[in-house]
Image (tube, rainbow, N blue to C red; front, side):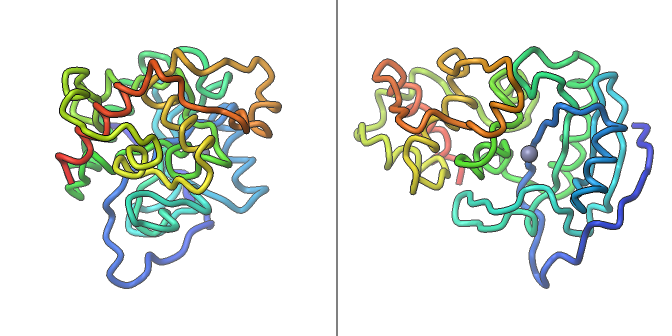
Length: 239
Ligand SMILES: [Zn+2]
């Protein structure tokens, strides 16, 4: 696939022995061109940006550690920049309205290459909101996780699996999937963004959303407990 290289100097070496084993997906409300300017201002980066028209830009070599995830945890990994490749998608609504088809097409191609190259486990294809649930809402409730899973990128649940899970402890189930559960409201909401997007409210003010990532008193609605159980089953089967 055609990749435009526009390298940024904001990266460093991956720590010795740190192998790539996660793919972190993001979105930003800026166009690709504006995103590059913002990254320059903040001295941040990601490995790739995909614009709304499907154009793919590479900013950092996959061999290097790009600075996209910040403080983050997932399935025992901390600070995921060291273990991951990061992809940013341009999305004017910050992932609250449907992503462009061409953009998702490019994302599928690029993700498949990365996943195959590093043999990234499906359980480690994650949202920025999954690994930093108190801080980040991206890539948002409109991100097509189920469709991507049907294309071999990440995991989706099978509702029939809920009955195979004995526990109904939300904290334990979230932990099984991989979430950091210190803030249970944040982790529960991040789970909903990924797997139960119909339960997540849209916020028309993107700046407000950035500062108010989750309702602090959020409790997973009982109706969605079976989804959580089915997900935990899927993720626990594929360590
Ligand atoms: Zn992000």
